[in-house]
Image (cartoon, rainbow over all chains, first blue to last red; front, side):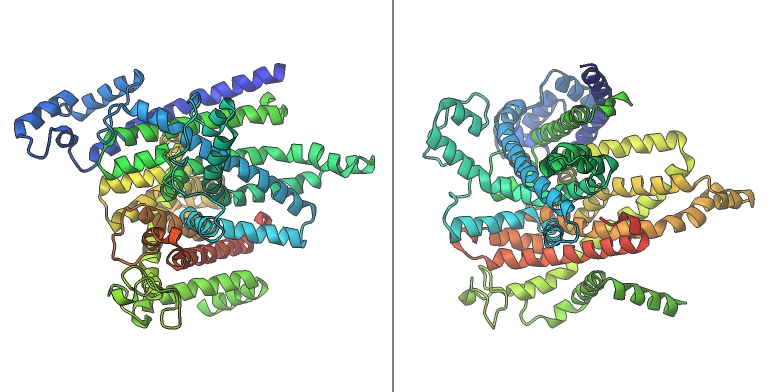
Length: 343
Length: 282
């Protein structure tokens, strides 16, 4: 219990030290978006024939006539109150749009991380148990190829194989077939909502829709995870405590999983945190390939139609998720290895 | 001098067949990039609608696209653009990152802390998203893909150069250079940087693959390169519309080109790192 408290303190300290970075992100996106081409006042105006006066009035309403530092202060004030502005595309507040779409992205990313971990850790462990064997070389080859295939290519090829050739996957667009009725939304995570509603057919339909995009994203990140698991397991298997465990005749499973793997898991957690944030970036590509209605495709559409507010909101959201993930990694560290929190 | 270096390199490559193959692949890529547009069997831009969407055959090795353009010719011609984008982007961030990082590592203090903070902020971004936003902000042109890719690579080079210089700044020979009256700037540029460069070159080769993927990703989502310019990422994007009706060659071949290019750079980088520092081998 005491060590848990220490972990929380350490995690809290790390969290506070990441706040300036978050603030930097905020200012940086604000400035970046000011350089974007296109005048939002013109977009907001009633139509292409809107007169100069009307545009000037809208500029004034939006605060665009003020000097940039004042605009920045206004923006920070708004963000502080939880107001991220309004999207020109959808006409909705950005916070509403993001809240509606975030579960789709998170569901996809978590599913991908789960698939990646479940396949990468056993692969890495197997490779480390028999270094130089066929399995080891196979894993290395797989890893070397895995990081070379762009996600958008592997996604499209998976569609070709599973949708066109084998016909086992559903039409690869969106989260759910249009003919299936949505469950009453509680969390926004379809898998959880269907399970709560007890709708097995719906759950299965959502699962089938999710599995291809999640695999696409997982394929790209299995390599770093398997590689670090292998390297870390090799060190751990060669250490004295494993030799001792072997010499007292413990079962192989117990030696490998309970002792060696637990001691090898820290670097894997670190890499998993990093991998998670690269996946947030890769979301843009995967969501585009599968027309997945997540936050990344929303931001991309906004970006291509010079709509500032959603892009700012999206980047801020991504940076915040990144901070939260780092926090989680810190806490997991303390749970996986209590020695960490003492230092 | 160069003769000995080359012979030494050849000797090393003989012991590392995989690295040798990767090096040969990179040389081949460069040859294709330079001479590709003169070797192709068809005009990469000319459309021929009577031959649209043909699967691979003897006449069209990689099939044709919806306008009847020869995919193989387009792939070959695209090599130059893809390589130029990646190499110039990585080159820019290599030079800037090395100089900034070296000065930070050497001087320490406030400069180091400010730059370090800035690097942290950049790394807190999902980098691909940052590149996206930059291309949109600066304008939808190829030069801006280069700039965006360079910027998102920059923090890694700054960190790397900073760490490498930092551990050397108090070594005897640096002390000696200072004592013999060299200015700080000259110590960094003439003594420290050359010692850091080999390790950074390895980093550069590993980074090139990533830069290729990034640039292709940007053009895949419609930023930077515009059709009908042949480029691997945009070729995949154009072929994506036909994948669910089974026209696999429009996606598979540009994808294969991307994969092979990235694989060559990665293997070369890995091999160079093993040669330079055998302990890093995993």
